[in-house]
Structures are given as C-alpha cells and as structure tokens.
Image (cartoon, rainbow over all chains, first blue to last red; front, top):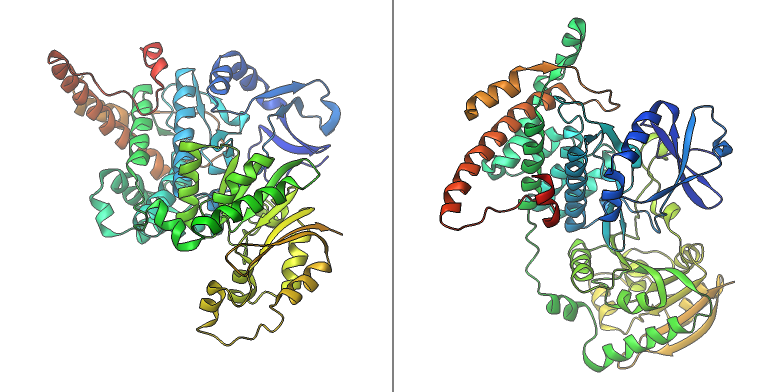
Length: 463
Length: 75
C-alpha cells in the first residue's frame, strides 16, 4: 500500500489504492474534527443533495500499516478521473458553484472548507461532486476563509480568463498546479474587466494586495501571527459575493448554432442515419460487457449518445472547447447522464504535473476502459499531425481491448481538404496500409462500408 | 448598525485563526475583510430595499447558494 501521489499536502489524512479501489485514511490528529463533522448532520445533508461523495468506514484499519491511522474510509468510487484543464467553461463554472454551495452548507453547520482546490471536484453522472471528505474544519467564529486565495486561483481567475481573454487559457492550470497566479490573470485580462466590480476586486485588487503584502507575513511573525477577523455574517456575505461573481461570468461562444455546428463537421441525412445504425450494431456486437467506452474526436457527442446505450460511462473527448461545451450542456439538459465530456488533444494529451511529475497523472496513465470509439479522427492524427498509422495502432491497443474505428481514405473530401495546402508524403495512408498497421496489434472482427462515402468502419480486438 | 461601522468593525478587529495547511496570504486576508464589509453593507441596503418592495407585494430574490427548501430552514 502506497499513498497516492496526489494526496500529501494535507496532514489530516491521505488517499491510497488497495485491491483496485481507492480508500482514504483519516489520521489521528484529525479524529476529533472528523467525528464532529460526521455527527453534525453536515455529511448526511451534503450526501443526500449529491454534493459530496458518500463513504463507508471500513472495519480493518491495519491495511495502511501506519501508526497514525484513526479510520479508513471507502468512498464512492469515481469511474474516470478528470482535471480542471480538461473541463469546458461550464464544467469549471459548475465545479466552482458546487464548491461554494458546499462551503455555504458547511458554515450553516458550524464548519468551513479549509481548501478550495478544483482537484477536490470530480464528475459523476455528469454532475460535479466534492470528493474530499477531510476538507471540513470546525468553523472558529471570527476567522476568515483561508481558502479564499485558492478559490480565486483555481476557479475565478481561469473562468474570467476563459470568458474575457481566450477559452484556451484554462490550460494555464497545467503550468500552475495551485491555480492561475492572480498577478498573471490580472495582466492577461482585458482592461474592461477593471470596471467589473467582482473582477476588479477578487482578481485585480487581489493581485495587487498579494504583491504589496508579500513580505508582510514575515514582519508580523516577529510580533506573533495575527490575521483579519471576519464575522459570520461577513463570511456568508463573502460567499454570496463570490457566487454572484462566478454566476455572472458568461462565455460568449463563437456564433455557431447547435445544428450548424454538426452540419459543418458531419454527415447529413440518410448517410448520417446509416452511420449511426452501423456504429450501434458494431458496439452491440462486442461480446464483453462494457463499463467504459472512450470516444475520441467525439465532437458534440452525437455518437457518444449511441455508445452510452452500450456501457456504464462514455468518456466523450474532443480537442475543441466549443464542441465539449455544447456536449456538456446537452448532456445536462437532455441526458443521458452517463457521458463525461472532456477537452483532450490526443496529439498531445494532458501531461503528468506537480511534485515528482506524479501529483496529477497524465491522461494516458488515467485512461482506462473497455472500448475505444474513434470516428472521423484518423486523418487528423495521421495527416494533420504526421503520426504514422502503426504508432496510432500501438497507442490505441494499449488502452482498451476493443476498438471501433472509421477509416477515412484520401479520396474523402475532408482528407482532400487537409492535403490541399501541403505535399502528400503519406504513401502508406491507404486502406491496405491502415489494415496492415492495425493488424500488428489487432484482429479485424468486422468491416463495413459507410454508405454514401468511401469510408470504412472496423470492429477490432487486441491480439 | 450603519454599514460604514460594520466595515470598520470587520477590518479592524483581529483574532487568531484556526489551524490550516494552506498559506492564506496576508493580502488575501485583508482584502477579504474589505470585500466582506462592502458585501455586508450592500446586503443591508438590499434588505431595506426588499422590505420596501415587499409593501408592493414583490418577493425578494433567493440566495444563489441556497436550495429552495433550505431557505426556510436557515431563517
């Protein structure tokens, strides 16, 4: 048993994996707070509202072998771990509101969140859920919120940057493990945000105050550390102010209507219907029971909806933040909820970050499942990104046992478009070349032409 | 209490805080006092405004953080 490398900052306990499940140890130093939290009614309230993961206390505490063990908790398991730099604008916004709701409920019960990390949130059934049971401290009347700065760095700053500067700036969370530094956010945000009261205070003034007081703590320590006091009413008002700041942030997406968006990128009419039927039947033909299907190049998730009928969860990924945003909104408005939309660039997937490059694992390390659905993507990987077909086959075969993949030949209008501006150096990019590359790692179980196109659909199984 | 008094009260009183593993940041703490003070003042003014509106039969908007069923509970 080894503690997970993502959980070492908080001395209250740690998370560890044991026989394919994730557990959480409560350390002795946190025993009193944990018991008070469980007895306060806050746990029941949060769990019954779906705001916090439930857990059971396991009987055997000896498994971690540490002398510091008070209790071992087995929390509700998260089917697929995702990180804030993989979430669309609304996902990060919903995660921010969840954190504030949890905090609001905690204050009512005499507790307070001691951190406000975006990594304390995960998505289950397409809803954000708070996962850190040990984040609750007893509220000491008069104390301000120690996690205010962290909340601004993890939520408010990236959301404001996404809304006002560029939606791609959520990726700053990759280079900054404790959220976007406020001086950086302040510099990158347009001048007009200084006229927005919430952003002017929580980001711009906040950044300035941090810089001004960066050595103030040292001066104060000499006289004994003291901090500003805040009444409970002030604390509650602060949370309302943050909630209103988050709620007001809107990302104006590039002007694309739902329908337009799909029509521009996909089949229409009969060909679309037949492709959907074909994908449905190929997935149905997989004899194993499927827990997770990963849909790569999922666009707005049209085919993820078909895949969702065949498994417990579809991880529906695309490089385009607009598509992922539309996918997430659609999942929340119309279901099915067993779809997790994520932003992922397969040509350079999320790296491992943090201490020892191990605190937040890479996408490839987190990636798991039973089948991959790869439609209308191969030409982007092989031609736009120059990845040899055998490299693609090798990567995919290491991820899941089953693969449903569409081959888009050179004659296809989409590939013609990709090749108009560059030399065609892809002599192996043919049906034969594709099959040869994939046959090194897979057996081809089924093939069918996609009507009204020259594309082919394959069902493959790893060797 | 007048809003301005509340602001001064919030900013000027000091106390020890609970044990924490995060560095709260001195600037962040001071700013929090100021923003909360202004928010409380705003809240107080809004409440008066809602009371006036209530005479005309208009309901006050609910909190962004409360679910409908616990608005009553928290009163």
